[in-house]
Image 1 (cartoon, protein in one colour):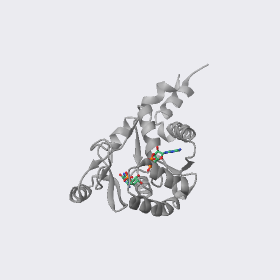
Image 2 (cartoon, protein in one colour):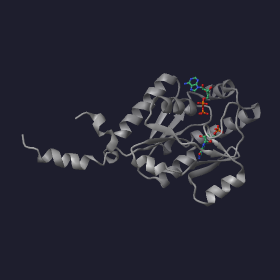
Image 3 (cartoon, protein in one colour):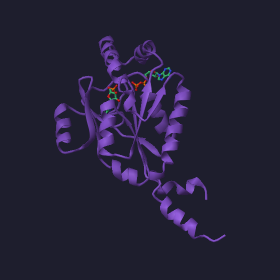
Image 4 (cartoon, protein in one colour):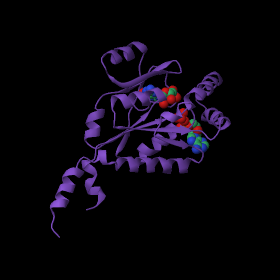
Length: 215
Ligand code: ADP
Ligand code: 5GP
Protein backbone atom coordinates (compact mmCIF):
# COMPACT_ATOMS: atom_id res chain seq x y z
CA UNK A 1 0.00 0.00 0.00
CA UNK A 2 1.46 3.42 -0.90
CA UNK A 3 1.39 6.30 1.53
CA UNK A 4 -0.76 8.30 -0.88
CA UNK A 5 -3.61 5.85 -0.41
CA UNK A 6 -3.64 6.87 3.25
CA UNK A 7 -3.81 10.61 2.67
CA UNK A 8 -7.62 11.00 2.70
CA UNK A 9 -7.79 9.45 6.16
CA UNK A 10 -5.45 11.98 7.72
CA UNK A 11 -6.59 14.79 10.04
CA UNK A 12 -5.39 18.18 8.88
CA UNK A 13 -3.16 20.40 10.98
CA UNK A 14 -2.81 24.10 11.69
CA UNK A 15 0.64 25.43 10.84
CA UNK A 16 1.25 28.66 12.76
CA UNK A 17 4.18 30.59 11.34
CA UNK A 18 5.48 33.39 13.56
CA UNK A 19 8.36 35.84 13.19
CA UNK A 20 9.24 39.43 13.91
CA UNK A 21 8.06 41.57 11.02
CA UNK A 22 10.51 41.32 8.10
CA UNK A 23 12.08 37.94 8.97
CA UNK A 24 10.33 36.25 6.04
CA UNK A 25 7.18 34.46 7.16
CA UNK A 26 4.96 35.94 4.44
CA UNK A 27 7.48 34.94 1.76
CA UNK A 28 7.74 31.40 3.11
CA UNK A 29 4.03 30.91 3.78
CA UNK A 30 2.93 32.19 0.34
CA UNK A 31 5.44 29.92 -1.40
CA UNK A 32 4.20 26.93 0.53
CA UNK A 33 0.50 27.51 -0.15
CA UNK A 34 1.25 28.23 -3.82
CA UNK A 35 3.10 24.94 -4.25
CA UNK A 36 1.13 22.61 -1.98
CA UNK A 37 -2.59 22.25 -2.81
CA UNK A 38 -3.27 20.54 0.51
CA UNK A 39 -2.61 23.65 2.60
CA UNK A 40 -4.37 27.01 2.39
CA UNK A 41 -3.72 30.28 4.12
CA UNK A 42 -6.26 31.39 6.69
CA UNK A 43 -7.16 34.96 5.65
CA UNK A 44 -7.10 37.15 8.74
CA UNK A 45 -9.23 40.14 9.57
CA UNK A 46 -7.36 43.36 10.31
CA UNK A 47 -8.17 46.94 11.18
CA UNK A 48 -5.00 48.27 9.53
CA UNK A 49 -5.12 49.91 6.08
CA UNK A 50 -4.16 47.92 2.97
CA UNK A 51 -0.57 48.30 1.76
CA UNK A 52 0.03 48.94 -1.94
CA UNK A 53 -0.86 45.78 -3.83
CA UNK A 54 -2.85 44.19 -1.00
CA UNK A 55 -6.30 42.97 -2.00
CA UNK A 56 -9.30 42.75 0.33
CA UNK A 57 -10.34 39.11 0.84
CA UNK A 58 -7.02 37.75 -0.45
CA UNK A 59 -4.31 39.18 1.78
CA UNK A 60 -6.62 40.25 4.60
CA UNK A 61 -10.24 41.11 5.23
CA UNK A 62 -9.86 44.84 5.88
CA UNK A 63 -12.46 46.02 8.40
CA UNK A 64 -12.98 48.90 10.83
CA UNK A 65 -12.72 48.51 14.61
CA UNK A 66 -16.50 48.26 15.10
CA UNK A 67 -16.83 45.42 12.59
CA UNK A 68 -13.92 43.65 14.26
CA UNK A 69 -15.36 44.02 17.75
CA UNK A 70 -18.80 42.78 16.63
CA UNK A 71 -17.29 39.67 15.03
CA UNK A 72 -15.19 39.07 18.14
CA UNK A 73 -18.27 39.40 20.38
CA UNK A 74 -19.96 36.68 18.31
CA UNK A 75 -17.02 34.32 18.91
CA UNK A 76 -16.04 34.67 15.26
CA UNK A 77 -12.30 34.34 15.85
CA UNK A 78 -10.14 31.34 16.71
CA UNK A 79 -7.69 33.87 18.10
CA UNK A 80 -7.13 37.60 17.94
CA UNK A 81 -4.51 40.10 19.11
CA UNK A 82 -3.58 43.76 19.00
CA UNK A 83 -0.32 44.11 17.08
CA UNK A 84 1.44 47.39 16.19
CA UNK A 85 -1.73 49.31 17.31
CA UNK A 86 -4.13 47.35 15.06
CA UNK A 87 -6.45 44.41 15.66
CA UNK A 88 -5.79 41.15 13.84
CA UNK A 89 -7.80 37.92 14.08
CA UNK A 90 -8.10 34.48 12.45
CA UNK A 91 -11.71 33.72 11.48
CA UNK A 92 -13.27 30.58 12.90
CA UNK A 93 -15.33 29.94 9.71
CA UNK A 94 -14.94 26.36 8.48
CA UNK A 95 -11.50 25.77 10.03
CA UNK A 96 -12.37 22.57 11.92
CA UNK A 97 -14.40 21.12 9.05
CA UNK A 98 -11.32 21.56 6.86
CA UNK A 99 -9.13 19.74 9.37
CA UNK A 100 -11.62 16.87 9.54
CA UNK A 101 -11.55 16.58 5.75
CA UNK A 102 -7.75 16.21 5.86
CA UNK A 103 -6.92 19.74 4.74
CA UNK A 104 -4.15 21.77 6.40
CA UNK A 105 -4.39 25.46 7.31
CA UNK A 106 -1.54 27.96 7.51
CA UNK A 107 -1.73 30.86 9.96
CA UNK A 108 0.47 33.93 9.58
CA UNK A 109 0.00 35.29 13.09
CA UNK A 110 1.97 36.99 15.87
CA UNK A 111 3.26 35.03 18.87
CA UNK A 112 0.14 35.74 20.95
CA UNK A 113 -2.04 34.35 18.16
CA UNK A 114 -0.03 31.15 17.97
CA UNK A 115 -0.41 30.54 21.71
CA UNK A 116 -4.16 31.23 21.57
CA UNK A 117 -4.53 28.82 18.64
CA UNK A 118 -2.92 26.17 20.79
CA UNK A 119 -5.68 26.78 23.36
CA UNK A 120 -8.50 26.87 20.75
CA UNK A 121 -7.28 23.75 18.96
CA UNK A 122 -4.99 21.69 21.19
CA UNK A 123 -3.35 18.87 19.27
CA UNK A 124 -3.96 20.49 15.88
CA UNK A 125 -1.41 23.31 16.03
CA UNK A 126 2.24 23.15 14.96
CA UNK A 127 4.08 26.33 15.95
CA UNK A 128 7.09 27.43 13.91
CA UNK A 129 9.18 30.49 14.79
CA UNK A 130 11.32 32.23 12.17
CA UNK A 131 14.38 34.20 13.24
CA UNK A 132 16.43 36.61 11.11
CA UNK A 133 20.16 35.83 10.80
CA UNK A 134 20.92 39.15 12.55
CA UNK A 135 19.14 42.39 13.45
CA UNK A 136 20.84 44.51 10.79
CA UNK A 137 19.56 42.08 8.13
CA UNK A 138 16.05 42.29 9.62
CA UNK A 139 16.14 46.08 9.27
CA UNK A 140 17.58 45.80 5.76
CA UNK A 141 14.69 43.51 4.71
CA UNK A 142 12.08 45.87 6.15
CA UNK A 143 13.64 48.76 4.23
CA UNK A 144 14.03 46.76 0.99
CA UNK A 145 10.42 45.53 1.18
CA UNK A 146 9.62 49.19 0.65
CA UNK A 147 6.11 49.06 2.11
CA UNK A 148 6.47 50.83 5.44
CA UNK A 149 7.43 54.40 6.36
CA UNK A 150 10.65 54.98 8.34
CA UNK A 151 8.55 55.59 11.48
CA UNK A 152 6.71 52.26 11.05
CA UNK A 153 10.00 50.44 10.40
CA UNK A 154 11.43 51.93 13.58
CA UNK A 155 8.41 50.71 15.56
CA UNK A 156 8.63 47.22 14.02
CA UNK A 157 12.34 47.01 14.86
CA UNK A 158 11.63 48.02 18.46
CA UNK A 159 8.86 45.41 18.71
CA UNK A 160 11.11 42.75 17.13
CA UNK A 161 13.20 42.44 20.31
CA UNK A 162 10.11 41.56 22.36
CA UNK A 163 8.82 39.13 19.73
CA UNK A 164 12.14 37.30 19.38
CA UNK A 165 12.24 36.75 23.15
CA UNK A 166 9.18 34.43 22.74
CA UNK A 167 11.12 31.88 20.72
CA UNK A 168 11.07 29.23 23.44
CA UNK A 169 7.27 28.83 23.17
CA UNK A 170 7.63 27.23 19.75
CA UNK A 171 7.91 23.64 18.52
CA UNK A 172 10.35 24.46 15.70
CA UNK A 173 12.72 27.36 15.04
CA UNK A 174 14.17 28.30 11.64
CA UNK A 175 16.91 30.88 11.13
CA UNK A 176 15.92 32.34 7.78
CA UNK A 177 19.30 33.15 6.24
CA UNK A 178 19.21 31.26 2.93
CA UNK A 179 15.60 31.41 1.68
CA UNK A 180 15.65 28.15 -0.29
CA UNK A 181 17.15 26.24 2.63
CA UNK A 182 14.56 27.68 5.05
CA UNK A 183 11.79 26.74 2.65
CA UNK A 184 13.09 23.16 2.32
CA UNK A 185 13.23 22.89 6.11
CA UNK A 186 9.70 24.23 6.47
CA UNK A 187 8.44 21.57 4.05
CA UNK A 188 10.29 18.89 6.04
CA UNK A 189 8.55 20.02 9.22
CA UNK A 190 5.16 19.89 7.50
CA UNK A 191 5.75 16.43 6.02
CA UNK A 192 6.88 15.00 9.37
CA UNK A 193 3.94 16.54 11.26
CA UNK A 194 1.49 15.12 8.73
CA UNK A 195 2.74 11.65 9.62
CA UNK A 196 2.20 11.96 13.36
CA UNK A 197 0.36 8.94 14.67
CA UNK A 198 -2.36 11.13 16.19
CA UNK A 199 -3.08 12.69 12.76
CA UNK A 200 -3.71 9.28 11.20
CA UNK A 201 -6.79 8.01 13.07
CA UNK A 202 -7.36 5.35 10.37
CA UNK A 203 -4.23 3.49 11.53
CA UNK A 204 -6.00 1.67 14.37
CA UNK A 205 -8.35 -0.14 11.98
CA UNK A 206 -5.56 -0.72 9.50
CA UNK A 207 -3.28 -2.31 12.09
CA UNK A 208 -6.14 -4.51 13.34
CA UNK A 209 -6.60 -5.76 9.78
CA UNK A 210 -2.86 -6.42 9.48
CA UNK A 211 -2.94 -8.46 12.64
CA UNK A 212 -5.81 -10.60 11.30
CA UNK A 213 -3.87 -11.50 8.15
CA UNK A 214 -2.41 -15.00 7.91
CA UNK A 215 0.88 -15.54 6.13
P1 ADP B 1 7.40 39.07 7.19
O1 ADP B 1 6.19 38.46 6.57
O2 ADP B 1 8.03 38.19 8.22
O3 ADP B 1 7.16 40.47 7.68
P2 ADP B 1 8.44 39.12 4.45
O4 ADP B 1 8.18 37.72 4.02
O5 ADP B 1 7.54 40.20 3.94
O6 ADP B 1 8.53 39.20 6.05
O7 ADP B 1 9.96 39.43 4.08
C1 ADP B 1 10.52 40.74 4.26
C2 ADP B 1 11.44 41.04 3.07
O8 ADP B 1 12.60 40.20 3.17
C3 ADP B 1 10.80 40.75 1.71
O9 ADP B 1 11.22 41.76 0.81
C4 ADP B 1 11.37 39.39 1.33
O10 ADP B 1 11.47 39.27 -0.08
C5 ADP B 1 12.75 39.43 1.98
N1 ADP B 1 13.24 38.09 2.40
C6 ADP B 1 12.56 37.10 3.00
N2 ADP B 1 13.37 36.06 3.28
C7 ADP B 1 14.60 36.40 2.84
C8 ADP B 1 15.89 35.74 2.83
N3 ADP B 1 16.07 34.51 3.34
N4 ADP B 1 16.94 36.40 2.31
C9 ADP B 1 16.79 37.66 1.80
N5 ADP B 1 15.61 38.34 1.76
C10 ADP B 1 14.52 37.72 2.29
P1 5GP C 1 1.32 42.98 8.95
O1 5GP C 1 0.66 44.27 9.34
O2 5GP C 1 2.81 43.16 8.71
O3 5GP C 1 0.62 42.26 7.84
O4 5GP C 1 1.22 42.02 10.23
C1 5GP C 1 1.69 42.46 11.47
C2 5GP C 1 1.72 41.30 12.43
O5 5GP C 1 0.39 40.83 12.70
C3 5GP C 1 2.51 40.11 11.90
O6 5GP C 1 3.31 39.60 12.97
C4 5GP C 1 1.43 39.12 11.53
O7 5GP C 1 1.87 37.79 11.62
C5 5GP C 1 0.39 39.42 12.59
N1 5GP C 1 -0.93 38.93 12.20
C6 5GP C 1 -1.48 38.91 10.96
N2 5GP C 1 -2.70 38.34 11.00
C7 5GP C 1 -2.90 37.98 12.29
C8 5GP C 1 -3.98 37.31 12.96
O8 5GP C 1 -5.00 36.94 12.40
N3 5GP C 1 -3.82 37.11 14.30
C9 5GP C 1 -2.72 37.51 14.98
N4 5GP C 1 -2.66 37.23 16.29
N5 5GP C 1 -1.69 38.13 14.38
C10 5GP C 1 -1.79 38.36 13.05
